[in-house]
Length: 274
Image (cartoon, rainbow, N blue to C red; front, side, top):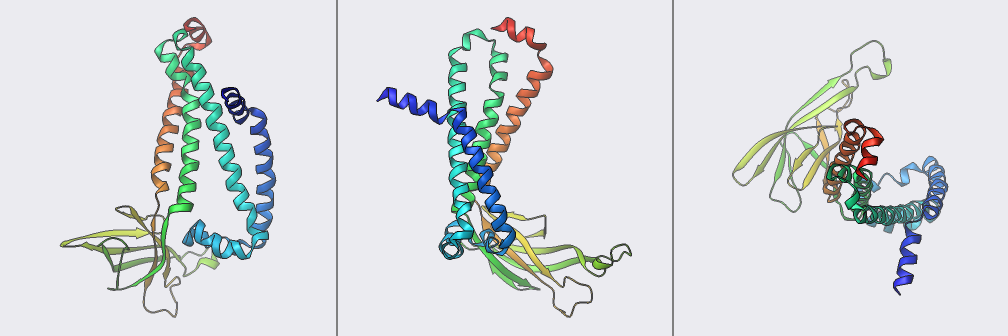
């Protein structure tokens, strides 16, 4: 049994499997491009529903246009497993030869492996986001109206809006169109109240939830809409913690790699430490 496990482990970490998976990924993403090009609207609800609800509705009734996405998840999972096995084998071999290196060189040699582990963590974060996110789309707020963040005692009230419209003469299409939009929200929880500003690329983080500005009105200066409003998406995404952990690990590995390149005195020093 141990021999079978060793053989399986070597096969999972082999370069041939890596190349095979990458070829399949190339073919699958080419199919995905064709599907997205023809029916992009079929995939847009993924941002609001999450993978499980989307799979039970849109994907279930359109298997010919959505199957490639699930194949993509499977291939990415296999690639992550292949990378994990390969990297772990390299780290184990490096640890066995630890006596041949100085402490500094040993740490520097871990740099690419740290970055590989970081990418696996980031991929796991994306999978966690699609599987376990809680999304509450289309929460509309008008002046002095309020909504409550589900699962919390925090309520939101729209205090004011600030729309800035394009008034230049170089892009006629944008004349009178809002190019910057922000809103002041009054948040309250019990006896505590505070003001936060939200914009298109400036979400509000409230505990484990994120508030995102999805749309707003009036989008045009001379619009028939007289009453301003904003539309929010409320999202709780457990994958965020994996993203940040993976990025920090990748940054650590990158710094170590740069230190190895610029602060060690060439291959001679590495050779003498062996």
